[in-house]
Amino acid sequence: MSTTTSVRPRVTTGVGRLVRRLEIERRRWARTDHPVVATEQAWRAGVAEGLRLAQLAIRKGV
Image (cartoon, rainbow, N blue to C red; front, top):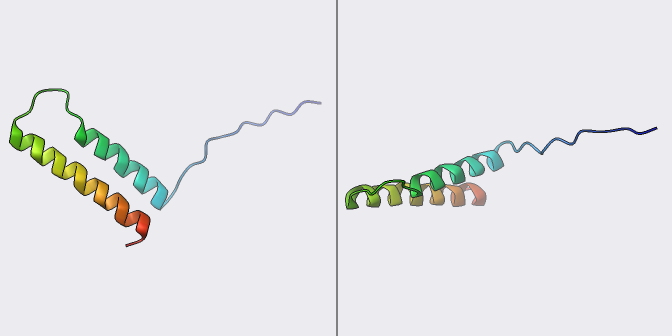
């Protein structure tokens, strides 16, 4: 008799989920599909850096 079990990917909850979401948002902010002015580029870099620092703080438990 053969039994087939479906293996679902692990659903991360809590901090892991938040860190993953921050990583997705950081990548979105760091990427641009069109030429941008220097001030917008600097602003986007600042947002991406802020998201990166938030990830670090969450991982450390700060």
